[in-house]
Length: 245
Image 1: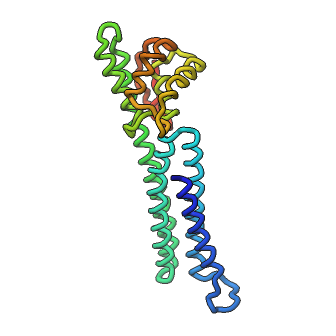
Image 2 (image 1 turned 180 degrees about the horizontal axis):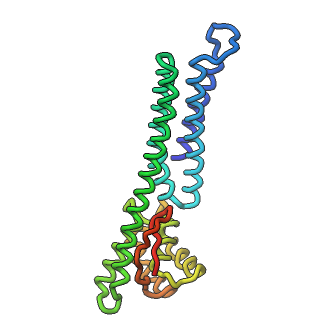
Image 3 (image 1 turned 90 degrees about the vertical axis):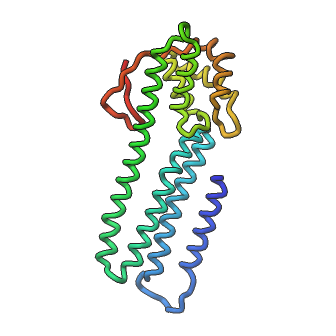
């Protein structure tokens, strides 16, 4: 998918570059025309999308498909709106140059603020859901109420699986660290290695496959999940809430 996107971007850049070099029948000019600025804006937007696509491809190669999907979901709409703003500014330049620069100076920062605020709000909302699910799991005993503990573990898995398509490698690491807070890095790495054997073609593990790995290997490696009781901190981390025992 990212390969097709990059090929499309490069083809579009080639078309824009060809258009910039085309003879417009005006002879040799010593200044930049409006059409040249228009083409430069398109090159800038294509370069931005190209860099984003390369980074997304790197995330996918590293099996961080959920991180790649979240980045796409945040940046692609941002890029589209940014392109519309720049086009509006360009087309309004002949009417009022002041309106052109004012629209860029006002609308672009507003777009950045709205995009960052929406991203942070979604991450904080997900962090609150994880903290609630983790608190519920820590208050349930696997020995006294095995069915309730199993349901609490499923709720926590769903809280980490924000797209409901399985956990990728980063989400799996965060999940195992949450349910095994006393485990060391080597133990978590061993648990991840066991769980990665059940990854599907999208490099994610479903709840059903995770439960199979938990019963067959993880409990032998790490034991029964025993998250510590947590209380939410009032301080927010970039990726969500900080929690303290």
